[in-house]
Image (cartoon, rainbow, N blue to C red; front, side, top):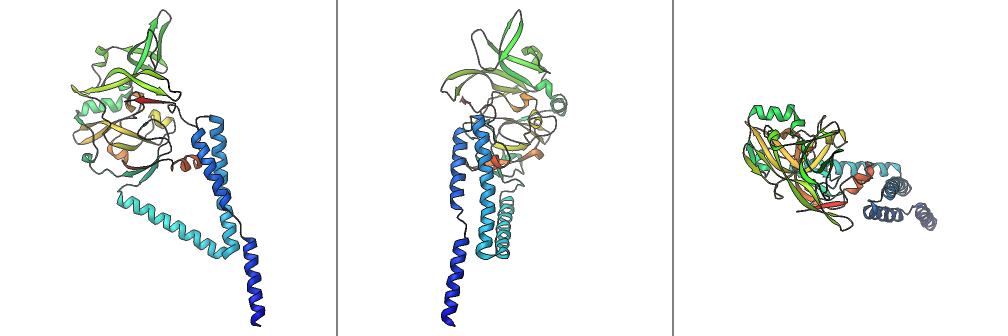
Length: 339
């Protein structure tokens, strides 16, 4: 009897080993596909193809893990293990929310607007902001009427620094300089561009100084582009400081970024407007030629700020970009401003 029992156990063990599914090659394929996606993401068709392949490989890996778990320990134990894993993730998530004092402790950089400090695909950790003193940036006092003007008429503050040339045919603009082009402010009214003089701008709350910055293309070529070098509010002039805090803020209907599908933006604080204790942040991407407000976005108030960046893990955020379908590299990833 004892000998037969051992043979039975041996046979059962053999069946289990035979039923076990090898999943590790799928994980190798996921890693290879993800690396290729990161390396080739600027080639649109390859980025889309590799992103889709990576997504389906992840689904296949999950299904095979479930089947393998069922074959080894049965459905009940497999479901229990999944439940435990979910509980652990939830506990970790709420633990991060508690210790980092924000409802969104982890986010991903979706664009290249913060190059070279932050890259597309970086995973970032946020710490909540309960006081304006936690944000490093210069604070400028404004009156309620001034702030009301900014919020009620954002188009009047949305003046862009561009390179332009005027001839008999009209005015032509571009971002990078070319022979014969000058740098100046323009107002974009439904696709109709109009040059704005300093005298006209003098009535605005936020006034801009235009200059140039060198940008390096992915090909190695270096060009000059029109760039906002400083702003002036109530006779106080401020140039961008790359030591200022980087925040994540939620966009709102009416913002250009919102209309383009960006629910959240990761940008550096340029300055803070103080309206008798109500604070609004002027933000700018390090790799953008102008402030967010110059592109038709409302300055976010403190309730829109999700937190400030306190940590970065490179590349790990690509998984979220792929799973969420954010496969195509956005504009601006082929050049970097030289600060």
